[in-house]
Image (cartoon, rainbow, N blue to C red; front, side):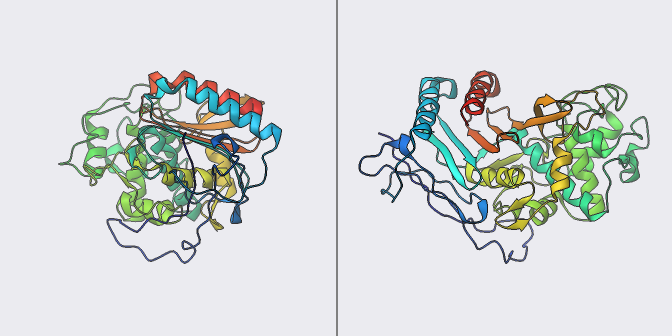
Length: 375
């Protein structure tokens, strides 16, 4: 029988440039699930968490906790979630971790396979939401506006790309190529990569007139941030998001950090991404610290395409749209990692796997439907 327990942990700093300790970062919060006498893994009734944040979720064989009896409804819900995931485990190659949270409680957690929640794995396009959050943090300072033209900051864009805006970069309406041969080159810096994109690639369409999902535009947005802040992307990420969201060990593109891939380069653990997702769910706060303004989260979750494709926010996909408002937002990944926040029913979830997008997407969406129906 799979036994689960959640314990506290706090990663150590490991950033390209040392940063001062965040005085608010020493407070851990957490949740516990267990399988004591008379319990099974389905009986993991949540214990409230101080400060309404999940700091660390770590699965292992462990001790029983002092938990109240689960309500029949919570038990039935967990049973359905558990049975669904067990029945579809082959879609995840038998390696899967799932977390569902609401307010200050753990609604459900699940693990099967070889990974634990501190195993670092590539998250691919789930990186986009993190990058968008970094950009929004700079926007809040007034140094940058979403509708600023990229050419204002990067001279190489003073060509047919001169009217592209920062908002268009992150909402997939810029017309910039989806991929480029400069993306992963370790002999380039991010600045050289982006200049090469500006000068050696053609626009796919007139900016603002169409939408096409891609990652190169996020590298351009990150380069704008470097120019504005006069720092490397690694420093900017750590100062604005990483050090505040318990992601001090997280880096973009560890194999070529001088030329990071802000659209898909993060390698991190479930724990680390869950901390970021908690911040989004909490509308900008993590562990009692204001990371982004509530208005910034709202902007990320709104249609940023001027109705060209309302499914795109900034770094987020928009779902369950009614009267222009999305009830759910999500981050998807080529590896099958799937994170989402439901604003209507006030819960959030994270599916962590490496089985791939095509193999998992229908199952991920079906599980989301199930959770939405039961919570």
